[in-house]
Amino acid sequence: MKPLHAKVLAVRSVPRQQIYKVLLAEPGRAWTIRELAGSLPDVSVEAVTATLHLMLGERLMDQVRHARGLTLQLNDEGRTAIEQIVQGWSAVPTTGESQP
Image (cartoon, rainbow, N blue to C red; front, side, top):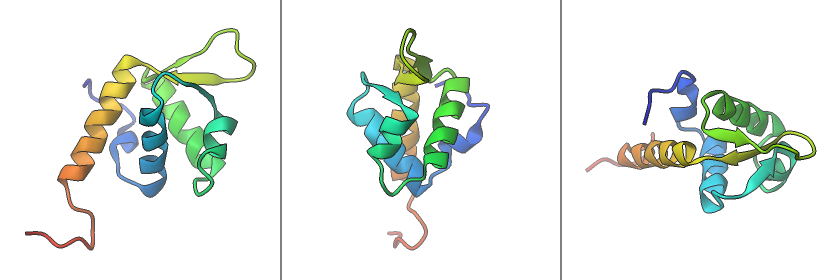
């Protein structure tokens, strides 16, 4: 994975975890911000918008041409990057978890 300029994409947060989970569940799907936000009722539209725009800027998502409105799709590099980020999160216990 190439280094991210927007390092916040690798910072663990509940909204980001939920966004990544949905994107990885359907990696070939094209999403509008509205569609993705609609599938994540506990995540604000602002969090979805910010995350997708940062991912687009990092070239982890491709813009779907000839689509009505901004429509984005996770590309292969994005899928790999998000999988690696999520794996890194699971290797580090979150605050409040007991450590062996």
